[in-house]
Image 1: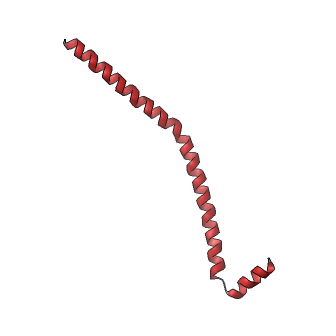
Image 2: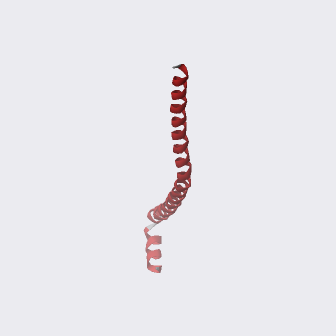
Image 3: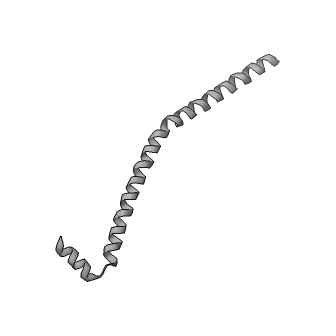
Length: 73
């Protein structure tokens, strides 16, 4: 009876370990996609920051300079 209980416990422990390993492998495979998405998002954020800086510069300039810049376009 005691050896049967040990056998059942070993089987349950193996099943739990297999599930943990399987989940870990899935997460490991998913990591590069997340890194790529993160890099793309960071690139978009950089572009938006540059655009905001340009808009801030345009807004804070004198109206005269702004008119000249618009006329030159």
